[in-house]
Image 1 (cartoon, helix red, strand yellow):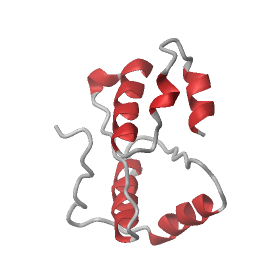
Image 2 (image 1 turned 60 degrees about the horizontal axis):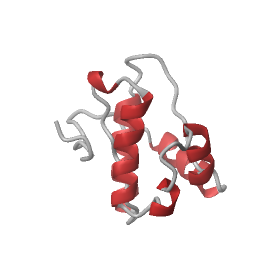
Image 3 (image 1 turned 90 degrees about the vertical axis):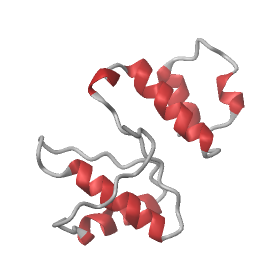
Length: 111
């Protein structure tokens, strides 16, 4: 499986333009992140696939990371996340001078 590739939009996809616009306006108000929370099966992944393609149409670069079942640890998540963010130049190497940096401190530097 490709961890860093945005999946294509599936056939018979339900477009939720109002949610895409709401995420756009939230991020336009200087928000650093948008958290999506809903029960299993409510379309969170499909919404994010749609939003990634929406960003791509606006000449933004969506950064995608697929988490597999065996990635179920904070360390693995952050290694993959940092790898992807560094590849796009979003994170500076200077953030990583201290190998003992806590996840909280890292998020403070990033945000």
